[in-house]
Image 1 (spheres, rainbow, N blue to C red):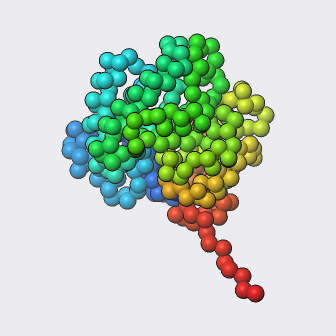
Image 2 (tube, rainbow, N blue to C red; image 1 turned 30 degrees about the horizontal axis):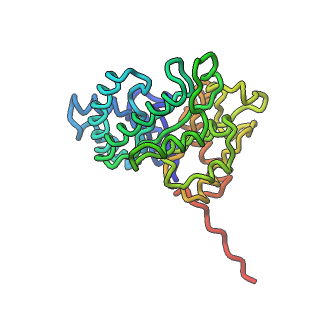
Length: 299
């Protein structure tokens, strides 16, 4: 596994050059892709121009977020799905092999079983659109309880149901976008993680939480940078478990933006890079994200 900078989620910079510069400066080996911006630049000046900075950086391009809403009516979904072929082709040009999408945990339109079928069918269509580009679909869930309050119908908000849904998608290139914060907030454990096969996991996100907030009061604003004074969720244990499983994909820090605490001398990328470095060291990982070999003792 390797350290990844998810700049689009955190709003770190306004231009790809700034994102790449920060990733290189603070020890990241991969970045996520703003595929809509890449397409815009490619249409203006060609793909060779659009990808030149990524190519020269030698960074891995880990994933892009699905650029449309999965909750739209059928006619809008079909329109967006057609556009996805172009986005996926552009992402593949820069070596990106993963698209990430999240399940909405509740809604007012469809009861559980009907919503399950809609998501299954839509994920099947998306995955098949990605297949020609040797690209996987990573499906994630959201566990914040406030996202389900005052909704007519509850839906998927924990790992086991997400795994069930992905197993029923009619395409082989579908896996789990694993957010450790959501895993723990939903009541999951490290054993829940160990129940997965490493090849099922497409991407991993880490975040901590404060001790004084009950799980049923958590919101996305409760997401903190790991490595502080709280240690509510053991992200080092998550990394160690992933290393033991043989996971080889990207790992990023995904706190709420307001919790990063950036200053003039402490950029968000620097803070996130230091957090990953601390976790890497605590677990005893090599720069390539593997468990360091222990020296043999001579009797």
